[in-house]
Length: 109
Image (cartoon, rainbow, N blue to C red; front, side, top):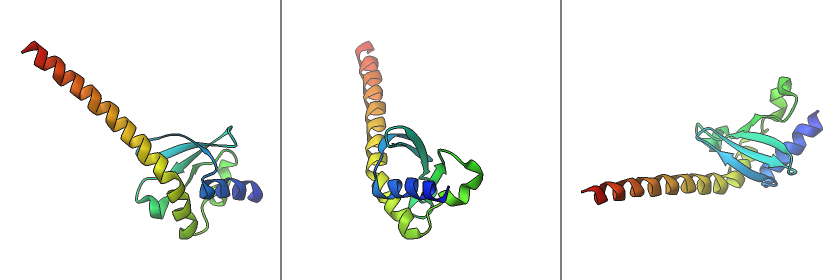
């Protein structure tokens, strides 16, 4: 079990996964194209970034935590560009919808 946890942690640190989505608290990725893993990215992610939803063995949560601040920072640096891009895309869609609503209001005037 320890080897499995180490494998997934190394994938997170190396950024060797496919980004799926994120919200304010977690980021979801797929490891090896099939294993969903969530990272906790809230509460100052540089200090608290950790595997939030292990793909298995939930009762052994401590195995899934990064061993050091250095590992957490590497994992955060790997996922941060994906998180920022995802948030920009959401904001862009929200702003486009807001502009469309305002344009519709202007046409009514």
